[in-house]
Length: 387
Ligand SMILES: [Zn+2]
Ligand SMILES: [Zn+2]
Image: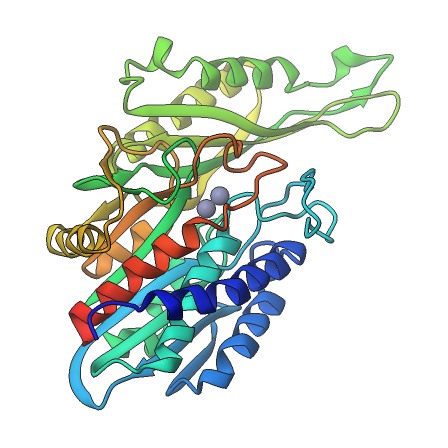
């Protein structure tokens, strides 16, 4: 059976959509995804997977469906976490958790991968094994590196890893691809400026980091004006800042800040970090402040491998899906880049249509219509590689 029968596909979709809505209602933030992982395990257990690996990098989950003959190990991976944004959506299944919501559409990615599990429950692969890998802490970039170091994943030594991200602004269900670089590298740069607080009536007795902080924010927002770096390949923004404490009558003695830095390659991001580090140090010294800064949550650029991508495109064509080649890499990042640094694989986008807002906007809701495209594509990849 090379293709999924329409009635089988139509039959599993309503239940998957219901699963997606439940996950949407009960989002878990990065590092706290165990309820969602358990929900997925409960959902997939009736299909009697050959193996289940729990506790991958904390809350991660791998569900394995194996064939009787030797063959490749094919991983389909998605993210478990939501983002710390209050859900302002109007759907009946909007988030029931304050300040947390699936505004990146990871609920839909999970439903697609779980749907593949349902199909594998109905028909096992002939050879090798198919692994459904649910990764925690994607939004912070902390999950994938730990998962890849887990002996259970190392032992699998996967032959292929596939994943997708829903992408607003592109035709609904269209397969969006790019040869080589798909998404940029990103990191947080976190630093502290240390001066000296004082009574508000005697500010001259202290050393406030206020002016230094404002100069650094200006630098970050006007990166290319002073750094000489190409704005087409680099970006930096202030993401969070704290100056002093909220007490009455005390001048600030400390400032903390988190900036987001992005570049189109890991090497370029390292260079950007070095430039920001130098700039922060110079400004801090100019104001007589102590300081320290470090990159955190490093997410490498995401690349697709040629052969894996060719397979995805051949399967998409066979499924009759709309295929679009992107002329530019995405300026956002995804920790899928960690996976394809280590193993052959491909990462694509699936169009979310227009009119659904942008990812991470407070009313974003994954369009259920694209689940069908995802399943048609994934099932064809399984039958090509694992029979
Ligand atoms: Zn996101
Ligand atoms: Zn995402």
